[in-house]
Amino acid sequence: MTTLVEIYDDGVEKDAADYLALIDCGGSPTYGMDAVNHIKDKVAKRKTTPKKLDLVVISHQDDDHNGLLGALGKELKTLDARVDSVHIGGLSWIQGNKDSVTEFLAAVKYAGTAVVFDAPAQSNYPDGGGTPTHFAVHKDVKFRLLISNLEVPGATADIVRNGSSAVVVVDNGINTVVLPGDATFQTMLAINTKLGGAQLTPQVLALEIPHHGALRTAVENYASGKKKTDLTWTIVNDFATKVMKPKSVGASAGPWNSDNHPVQEVIDVFIGTTEAAPSHTYVAFIFFQKKTMIQWATVTTDRAVETTIRQLVLHQKKRKLNAPPAAAGADFVVGHIVYRLTGALGMRPEEMVEFRPFRTFRMHGPDEDVVQAPEP
Image (cartoon, rainbow, N blue to C red; front, side, top):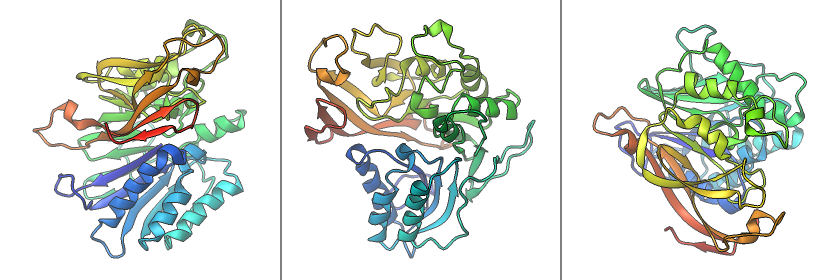
């Protein structure tokens, strides 16, 4: 999960952005360096002296949300670039992950106020409604914390980390994009409660599906071996259909990832309010399917749903019982999901969401590159 917010004061995308905000910077070097290079390129083309990233937010400490900071720091150091403002979300930070953040800040010669790890729970949204505040702003675009550093008593260590993710709202007064990190059902419940079950405003143009579309943290009583109907979907359903009501949704996850993200049954919860879109495909994991079937699938849809893997082409149609999915071998079309957070009257809803492919990977196992073909 690596999200770069690029702001252009005249509303036209170009080489030089007027403001850059980085929300998370994680993933494996195999698939993440394209994002690192894109960020470096956008910083290099800034007209500021020195070159800079205006804002960096790390939602929480998991490697798939901050694991590329070291690589990015090295690249930005070659530009003598700076970072103006930093916000750190999440609880239970271990020293090694703290060191990764502080090393990145040293590489960009961060001179701002001291970053705070394991900060108290916070939000820019008052309980029961009212006008929200913000923690960063550029002209009409405001960055708000819907919730951050929520405590999840009695939870396992990974749920404490994920449930305390900073949930960031990017709001230009007309549309919003919601970036929830690895928010769990506990985080979603806190958001539902804070907003009183009312829809977030302005309208949510796009929502990154929490925790990459994970099933385990979306439902309230996950246990292996249960049927779909045995699981309780109330909180995530209220979050999706009453509080967010997103016009489009996306999920960030790599090919054949061992966590089996995103899960199609979780995506299904968020589809109901999305806009119609030209027919296209995305890749998801079909959880409630016979284990003898290949559970990764290329899904065709006419709704505004995207994942960072657009297409999966299997080289074999079947695999042996209990063999890993990757035993089939596959080509993956990998790309970035782009949301245009604009109020331009001439832009149709489907034009505000775009998938930009950048590689086709041929793989025979998790994280094993065989071919990196050029852009499709």
